[in-house]
Length: 355
Ligand SMILES: [Zn+2]
Image (cartoon, rainbow, N blue to C red; front, side, top):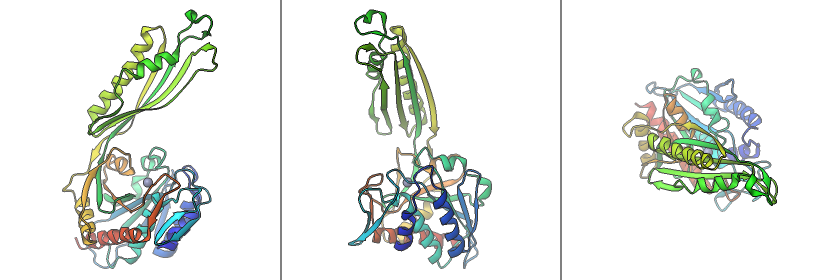
């Protein structure tokens, strides 16, 4: 499995450039698992593998994402003292190729399993794009697991509503020596941002102003500023309310001084929660316990493909793969943890087949 994982990370697949990795994975699944593979119109891979052993058990999907963040070109994995890491100039890509390696190993080694559909999505890191476009008509499974978190004992069962807030402030340009003829867009932005709360607003709600760009020259009153902000909450209503507060702060501040604020609020995805007593969460917890760990369920403020797929009607939970320091050149995974992840997934398939 470690060798297979290393082979996977050697194939570049930064977001937007996953095609070669998808093609290699398709060939591998066809050769090793006799899977029937299809790419949907968006380029996501769906691989169907028939049941083995016991005939019980409804179909289940196991998903991971193909894309990695940057810097992810020319990854050279090194296995040293039981840990896999990159040579140091790139990420490792355990997020999420460790998930996929563990899935394949689990399907290969499970003594019995229900029909399995391995789903490999594109563009997870850039807005869950693949999951949004995934052709669900290719899937028989109504429930599944995404192997794309860290802690091996955690089952992630819910996430937030996420609103993007894009702002363009238009003031009036003037020479810095005659500022009375201008309206400073930078000043409007600064004042507006201090009119709403930012950071952790309560234990389920956060807000952030992530980028700000504006002004052209030192000796001119700046005419334009653009801002990218966002807020998230496990409570859908709280997220909408915070987004409205931010929008109003920009609009009112701008209007008061004769500037204009064009604010666009976009809901990226909506909060959802897979019930604790649903079949898939029970299955995940049993599989973790059977691997000797204490299962815990969590809700997180981060986005995962599970939010999209849950929103689209599939019963979905996320489990951990054991990687550390994802999205950094220090990213690494212990071989023992990767093996544990595949053990959990194998347990899950065997328990599901016996249902
Ligand atoms: Zn990931």
